[in-house]
Amino acid sequence: MFDEILKKIEFFSLLSPKEIELINNSCKIITLNKNNILFYEGEIAKSFYILVQGNLRLYKTTAMGNEIIIHNFTQPTMLAEMATFQNSAFPATAISVSKITKVAILEKEVFISLLQKNGNLSFHIIGSLIKKMKSLEQTIHRNLVYDSTQRVCALLKDKPEILAEKKHLEVANLLNMAPETLSRSIKKLRDKGYLDKNNMIINYSFDKLLL
Image (cartoon, rainbow, N blue to C red; front, top):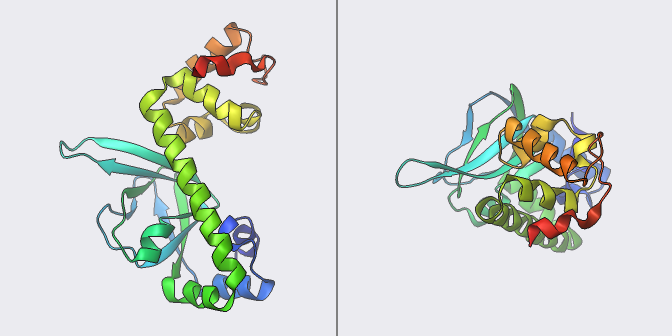
């Protein structure tokens, strides 16, 4: 059904074709429209969620009812793995931000069974979780400390060609900002001579803006 998508997800990259097929056959696909909720903050995580199409936003709600965006996810990726492993509550709410979002739901028991049979996979998953936690920490830091232009610079430092490869709407979602704000930041970087007209980096000293 979506074998090739699964292979692109770090969690499953070490699995054999037979194991991939098992996961494929064990998943149930659900479709979300824009603004549909996948899960709510505080609900107990009992299954693994695999984003196979579209985009999801993870956000927390403050005591005053304000929403704080934690991260924007694009396919393919897994969500809330740590909560599912620990059988704990989701730390945030996941909402669809694309017209159509498709998510594969994998029962926890199926994946745990694979882990028990594949020791190397367990170590691989630990590494994947650590990597993802560091990425989320960086995202939170950027959102709290950096202004919009600095956030664009930080992203370019990690992914130099992203502005040329992806649509501005996708990049704006990734950075948790409005497309108009992204456009203003890009123009500012062009005017300062850091980007060319195709949004490719021509002066790598832009990272001094992060100091």
